[in-house]
Structure formats: structure tokens, C-alpha cells
Length: 245
Image (cartoon, rainbow, N blue to C red; front, side, top):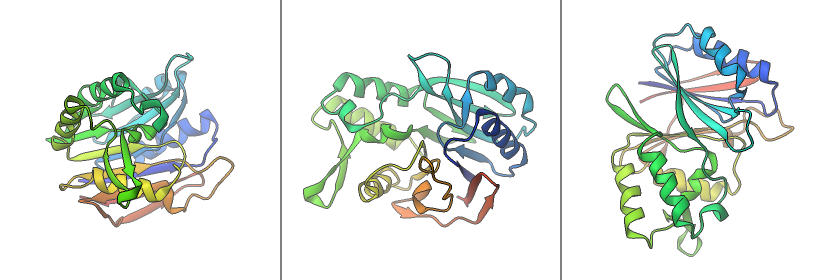
């Protein structure tokens, strides 16, 4: 399987994001395409994108930033066999303080993982974790930033989380902009990719930055080890790295 991860300049116009996204989808030869967060800007462009898709073989995961309500943002979509599908899920949390000690929110997030965030591609199980939802994990600084489930004192939640991971082969983590403390994030990526899982993340550049080549934009791991891309493709506003698994 060929997996391609795509990052954009931060702050591109809605029209440019739509044009870039459709062109990359239609020209890609990969099996699975992951875009960075905020792939599409405004909800009306979803209907336009439906009509622009000509690639009938690729699987795509992307995010809609603005669905035109202040109640929901960052909605996930999938394209399969040329059909654009609403996954009926959106980002649940953004930072560790949202979920620290919040058992109900953790329950809600795990429910999303178990239902709307899990699907299969050619028999390979895929899980989507959106941006700051990676804070369902925490680092133990006194133990070399060892990683564990944030609410591990709740046996039921911990068992559900471990069960989700045990059934997952590929984790996709679309991100909006580079996250802080890359040392801790590295440990979390290694954790998520252990036991022969794959982990892929892609984010946009920092605000007011056009440095599309910085390392923190894209990551690929297998079994806690960094993967090497087989190809890099660039446009004026984006970068794609391609991996064979």
C-alpha cells in the first residue's frame, strides 16, 4: 500500500485550498491520501469538491474547517471509490486541560474512535485521531516521558482504549499547525505505532510561515521507528511525502 501525506501553507484562501485539494486527489497515484487539518475551508466547497473528483481508486481522509455553525468545527470526511462521504464526526478536544480528569469526555472520544473514526481499507483497519485529541495520552516526565492513557485509573476506559489500539493497523493524525513540545509528541507517536502499527501525521505550516520543509509538519512511524519516504512532491503551496508499507 502506498500512503501519501500532504501539508499546506497556513492561511490559504478557501478557493485555493479547494483547488489544491482536488488537483492533488485527482493526480495522486497513492492508495491512501491524508491531508493536514483544515483541508477545506468552508462547507459550500464540499458540494463543489464532490463534482471535481475524478480519481475513483484512491482513499482520502480530509477535514472541513467551517461547517457554518459555532457549535461544530473540524469535521472529518472520507473519499472512497470516487464518492465523498461524511464521517459524521468532528474534533472532540484540543488540549490536555480539556480531558484531564474528564471521564465523560474521554468516554465520548472513545465512542467516536469505536464508531465514526474506524474503517477498513482492503481489510486493513484505520483509526483517525484529530489534532489535539492525541492528548488522550500523557507523558510521565519523571520516567523519561513514558506514555500512558491519560485516564488509566478508570479500568473500563483503559480497556476500551487498549482494545481500540489492538484492532488498529494504521493511525491517521491530521493536525492544524505544529504542536508544542516535540519531545513529548515523539514519545506519543512511538507509543501509538508500537506493536507493529503504522502512524502518520500531517499538519500545515505555522501561522505566518511558508517553511514547508520543516520536520515537524509530517511524521511517519512503524513499530516505534521513523519511516523513510520513497518520494517527495511539491507545489507552490504544499508538500507531499509518499511511503510504501
